[in-house]
Length: 187
Length: 251
Image (cartoon, rainbow over all chains, first blue to last red):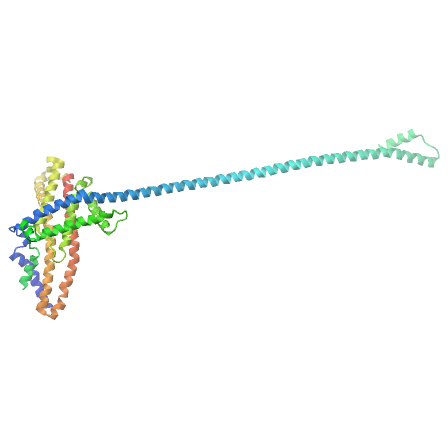
């Protein structure tokens, strides 16, 4: 029930602007009013002043501020880029240095190993030579001892033979004969 | 009583003189007061924004820079590189209309963009400027603007008058669009507000409850009017750019 008056009122009110505009003139359309034209003249003055304020003062300054910021950011980015490049360069150098150091140390190790092997080989060669010399010495000593012993065997054999022959036969055999016989036996 | 409130709905557009007897003498109107206020607000905004020139902008500086870059982008996109020389003009126009529209939304303030004489003067200036720019860039070759390229010859007698009429209607559509939008919004506001008063005086306690409906409508309308205030300023500026683009590039 409450809706009906509201609805009718709203319809009536909705018509009002149209009725009012049809009946009374819009103040905007009242071109007889000198103020309608006067406001445009004053607007022109205000806008010209505003235009010069904006174009000569405000906008170039703001543009300068913005450009300064943009160039500042660009500079910072450039600095960062350079720093990054520098860092990357440093890293490559470091890696190179590490590789060089590794190679150097490996060659040093190889050198040391080779030197040690060389030294060991020289030492063993020296030792072998010494041992060979000692063996040669010992062999010649043995040979000398053997020939001494063999040389010593002749007179003993002759003495024993002559004394045996003397006991068995009771006569002495000539020493040259025994020697001859012994030489054939012992040879 | 209904008649009275309806008439009052248009009373808000009534021009009077401002600034006392001096204003009356030089016919400085209440609408000019608002124009002066708008210009002052724009100037003060830039004065505050330019006080620090901070690398990291504060609110006011941010607002000034945002408006600068917004219009700059619009001019660059719409007109192209040659648009730079018109940027201060478009910016002044946009800022002036936008602040004028926004000021008009405040109670007891005057919406100067609701006057067809004001919007008409602006539109006619834009029209004359773009036409002058067209002739300045192309000389008499600007008349080629009325015959779009790639159109068969037999169509030209039909097309050229249409193009001329559409060209000449530009200032009318430009001015009426802004004037009508602002006027309509303000009239609706006042009609709904008058409706509330009528409900309360006519229906008493029931009317107070019922008045919530037009109040809600007015609240929604306020949001819409803020959108319209921005949108119409933007449309005016974009169309100005577009007309200048046509004048410079022909098509």
